[in-house]
Length: 424
Length: 123
Image (tube, rainbow over all chains, first blue to last red):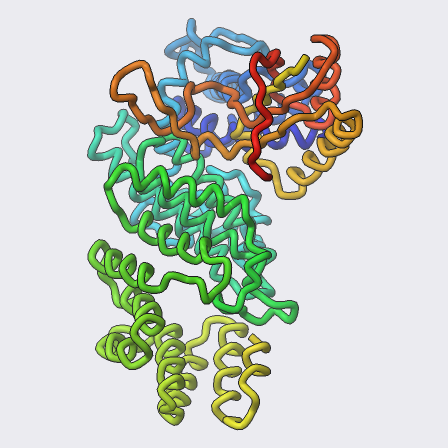
């Protein structure tokens, strides 16, 4: 690997800890970010000559802090600052001191940084954009590309989000146990949002959005290292890994959606699956079930089935029943109905989702599932109506195309079924 | 003499590798491994999943205690190992240097192997 690539990786991986610590010192996001940028510039100059420091994060924190304090002094003509003795100019030397100062705060620093991005006043898209900018260090251009908006629009979005969190007064004291648990839940939810933003894409956008999934997995692993005994965080990481493992098989060469049961399972990423399954194994030992663990367990049932017909649908049905209890929602019931249709047949599944019609009247998948069940029951006219509704609600061209394929099948009942099946 | 070459690196960094970077590193390492295989000197090779997937059994008490995570919290983590047949320490260091050129960053710990059973597990 070239020097630059190595340094780039080191800077990226040190970023959350370094900015988190700088934020604790300066209590201002912009100052912390600028200090980090300055430290990175110094690193790019000195690391290729002197070799990388043993602890890049500590180095960046110390240098960033000194540079920022220098510039504050210059601009404000301030003389003495607190902790002067502790931060005497160490130049570019590695600092055991910084290590001691910061390692005990490591976890809270990173959590604070992540938590700031989850401010409840921020809409989800702004939370995600802010986290990708501040925590992950993606450029505005990269984020704009992933969200399929212009760079200037994204710049505005991030600036607005920053202004809002600056006014939010996130407390800097070390959080108590309850506060910490709440922050953890909020951060986990945000990481899941980042993943979904990257995953719920059509094939044309999948390439541009894939970095969001990678970033979400990186953040989930980071969170798990901070909270290595939290089964729900194991579940979150496992869920993201198991879903991401299927990404290479989700679209065919023409960009059409390939349903889970039709996917070429040899294209699934085996290493991600291995890691996901290992994490579920660990989580189960804690006997503290939560929504991420159950969803990961469902994804694991698919990952464990070598062929679609090997899928243990009755176990999946039980898992969805557990999820309904933990996190009741019509969408969960809808998903459960798919499992029920495999175990008990389409009529039972249809009876299960019919009561959801009002709550899910604007939901694409509801009409897609409904149409599929009606079609299996040979109620073709009603199926056609449901598929029409689904097309009207489709969020992407690929979704609409997928439903249209079902409609075509209904129009031409004489067409040989295997051919239509192969087209999926 | 058999030597274990234990691979330590900061997994924050290795997890930040892109797929392309990872593939490039593995391809360069494969060249070194192929050379050793041809010489009949390469034993088992393992790349370990991240330490977040690790569990530790503390057996200094009864019943043993099961803990989530790796044995020790360190800046660099044990990420994999090789077993290589070498004449002496100098030979093992030479292999480690070759591997290090293919995959810079982190450290290799070279440990002579006491008991070795190749086992029968298929890859």
